[in-house]
Length: 310
Ligand code: NAD
Ligand code: UDP
Image (cartoon, rainbow, N blue to C red; front, side, top):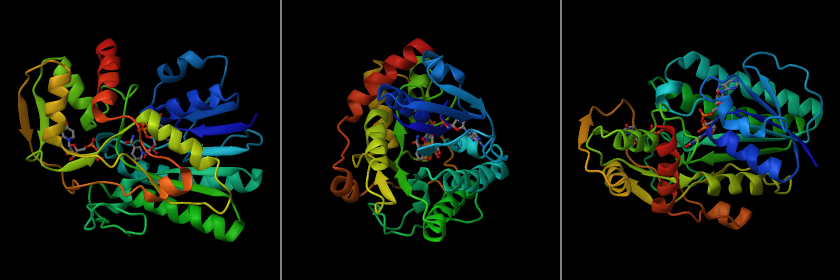
């Protein structure tokens, strides 16, 4: 049994990760400031895990020793991370610094939830890990993109300077049950809108693409990455290489919710990436991992969840 800290554990991905770790019999401390997460997401684990409400930009409380740290704390939806961009940047960079110090002092292995956003609006398609990206440093997405890039820098410098054992994954768009209905990301927006018989809000012409990974597949990738030998640090792309336009996604959601709601076209947000698809050869080779859940199946599970929620 290991003692494991999960930051952002009350969020969408964090709560699924904690479910898996609890199932495996580990002792879990979940640290979250509840900015975008909710205690509801971990309510079923009451009495089985320790919850600490805390912001990772502040000095961390005394929590004892850990074998492993998963750093997932950071709002992931553009709507939320742009609401207070300075705080988002601090969360990524200062937060990473605080957790890396904790890892250094307690000799813990540390995992970073990085993102496909480090590739920005990519000029190379699909995106392999060795692509350095195309990021606007001063735009409205920069607080997140550059924050996550800064966090990756800190992780690799801590590994080089202090021999901290790091595991960095770059997550591509992931969806599933426990996304917040007000989260603002495209999958939750489309499903909630369709269930409420509202028009689906398509930004721009809807021809921009994303590759959507189901949450269970992603968490399997996290667990495999954490279990790799020390020399495997990443960054490793985790995502589903099947790429769809937002119009195709809207069509699927309407079909699966048996709805004929209309589409409502709205302006494309600034710096919205035109295309995104992971190269997952590294994950296949080093983690023996690839996604198994197809979009239709994953969307069905997610729709069932939102039907109860909305
Ligand atoms: P989420 O918003 O549901 O979860 C983030 C959690 O972190 C929330 O519980 C929130 O309250 C907490 N948090 C935010 N700022 C914090 C702070 N300063 N201190 C403590 N807690 C804080 O988002 P998610 O989809 O679960 O994303 C989890 C992680 O994965 C994030 O780091 C995100 O950047 C990364 N990621 C997610 C995706 C995706 O598609 N879901 C893609 C790429 C990267
Ligand atoms: N999007 C959309 N309608 C929505 C929300 C998002 O068309 O209601 C688009 C958005 O412009 C982007 C894509 O869907 O091109 C994915 O957006 P999301 O916020 O889910 O993730 P990210 O942009 O971070 O990949």
